[in-house]
Amino acid sequence: MTDTLRPPATAPTVTVSTADAPRKLNRSLGVVGGTLLTLSCVTPASSLFVLVPTLFNSLGTATALTIGIGAIICVAVAFAYSELGTLIPSAGGEYAMVGTLAGRFAGWLVFIQSLIVVMIVPSVIAIGTAAYLAPIVHLSPAVAGAAVMLAATVAGLLDLRANAWITGIFLVLEVIAAGVVSFLGFAHSQRGASSMLHGVLADSSGATSGVGLTAILAAMGTALFVTQGFSTAIYLSEELENPRKNVARTVLWTLGLSTVVILVPVVAITVGAPDLATLTGGDISAMVSGWSNSAVGTFISLCIALAIINAGIVMVIQNSRVLFASGRDRAWPEPVNKAFGTLNRFNAPWVSTLAVGVPGAALCFVPGQLLTNITGVAVAALYLLVAVAALLSRRGAHKSSPAWRQPLWPVLPVLLIVVLGYVLTQLDTTALIWTGAITVAASLYWVFYLRPRQESRWVITLPEDEQL
Image (cartoon, helix red, strand yellow):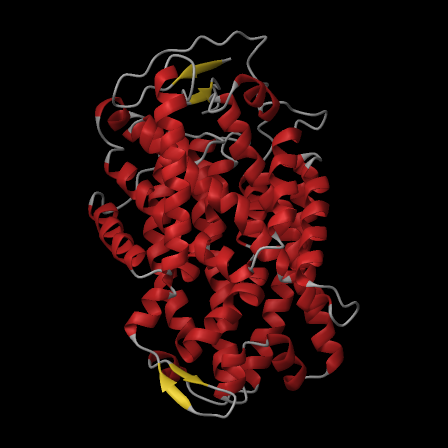
């Protein structure tokens, strides 16, 4: 049974019969389980070994500085997520929060940005599997990525608590891999930490060039993407025990831990790379082998491959919850809504899981850099819209609602809006065009299908639950 949350502009009430309403997700996760799943979705090792090399390619020694700036921005974002996620705990995540506070069209735009992210990110990570399976078997990146996505889809159909343990075990392995890389990098230090404050690139011939502020800003979308997964706690809010407290704890713990697990090895690699050309090349496995031996390099590569599989499992779990919630909130024609809201015997939204995993396997055959750039644009736009909603979180009935409240409000949301608005102007033009085109198409869907059916479509809901 659900009750309708009305956004600032009065929304129509939709009466949902018990027989027609989708079943509730079970509250089976505590802070530890939620943090394991959420940290696995950040996938520190897969972000480190799949996304960070592209930053080394374009930023050289400025990579750690760029990620650090991105992490600082994400602290303010995490505060906004924590407040809004405890105020409006829904599997719909950002769109439920923004739609409730800023109106249903704003919620729809947020849903589209989050949908771009949830459909593309698992594929971006999965494509990196092939490089780290090379010591055992040679596969094309697209084929290996598609296989990982299909395996993650199967795992996503199982019980959530079981998946928390599976991903927890894999997470230990990826943290070990990050720790080994950190130890080896610092043990073979070639340059001081001050080298990271003035970015330098080098090509294969050894010729060097400086890295300016423009290049750092252009890479900020990827830097935000590196730690983006902390928002998973919001998507799991209907399955977290005592969400009013545990959502914020999970978000903040995840961001802090993931920043450490990612940034420390990046610093170690930067100071330990034998020369700047090797650092710019971004082949971390080769550097590990050079610092130790081929056996250690193979071990690290296998840990990374497992980390990527782990990331795929958690992302499919998270992303299926977004589609589940969109079906419950009637974003689609009725047959699609019912399909997305269907749960299997493990209480997993199985149709939504397949709808995420199978297209994700197909996206592995699209150029990875384009997918990464599009995701960076969508993440920045998503954070900006969440910051706008955070400005509206303390008005009307929401002002006195029980929730975790962020410090320095409204200063932090305003700063976020300004910074992220500027960052968007600096991102890849092709990615901006693709993301803009998708957003325009979605807006037309709103105008011609959802808006004329306000009595029965896109009504944001929360399950009744005395534990909220």
